Length: 319
Image (tube, rainbow, N blue to C red; front, top):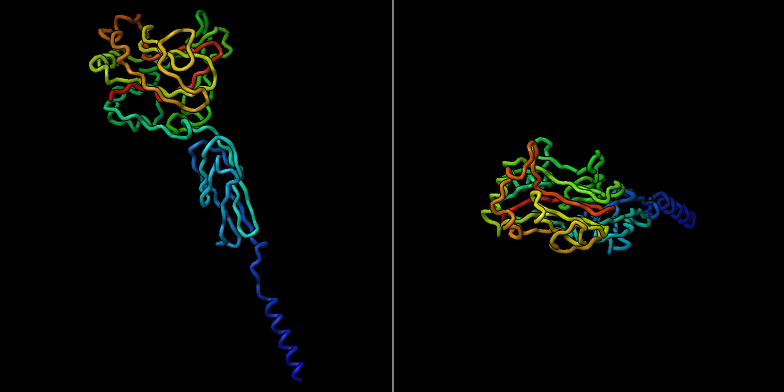
């Protein structure tokens, strides 16, 4: 009788154990909201993991943190390349491929707006112009009413020397992606060269020149450049041949060398001291150099045959 009771009690205990659910790591599932991430150096994006059962701890790992790191789902792009981000919960795993492109500036250091007492913007993104705020004395940005951008044409034809390309990647300040800067190509136009420039109203241009002449030592022109080819570009102010300058590879059109930069696809910035041209600007009268009906050029450039020109953040400023 005692043995029978023991047997019944034992079977009951086993039944209770069998009906009690166990936490099996194989029952955990995890899914990420993205399977791929396309990023640029300096970017951060969030990966969200959905885990069942809810509340199960998630461990994050980057297979190559030299290119992108991850901290609790926050992915930060470090250098150009690719890696796999793995989210683990129990024995379950989910992964996301991260592809990192070149950042908005060299080695991922995002450029900030130069501090100045006065700005004269020529080509900048909306966010940057808003940051300039009340310090904008004359706005030269293109509106196709008072201010224009003119790609030049081959003489005697309507063929533009520059092809306006669709830009890819972030602009100079990293505020806009795919479209936030100017990308021009001289390739395939048959002319062997390309040129263009920005025009302004004579009275406003004269005001800028007068302001520069009043304090040339504190006036600068800012430009951001992003290149990969070895062709040269030359730049100049107010249509004056004597102000031509080159940055990096020399141009067949001449110009004083201002500096150099790596043509590695990253953005580089340059501040051109306008005191270099004080003699050319002194006493300059815009009205004396105009043809009837013309608007004068404020800034112009030329590119060697088959070259490309990527620029952003064009503005004059006074420290």
